[in-house]
Length: 93
Image (cartoon, rainbow, N blue to C red; front, side, top):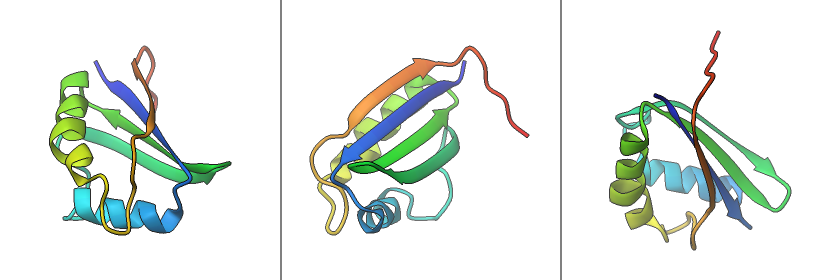
């Protein structure tokens, strides 16, 4: 079952997002197990939405790739506000 993970990074900027993505997605594509990624500026920071093949693939990426790169030079610092859910509906075009 697919897994939704959102991260809100308070106070973050688009520039910090791109620095972080360069560190954690160095080949420019999606990491193994991620099937969708979107990010945007919102009031007070940056919101990232990722859809994963499973909770296990999401947990592995966060623990082994993302958080070891925080803080990243020019990127994010601190911990994001996180929300997660198992999907019960996933549509695509």
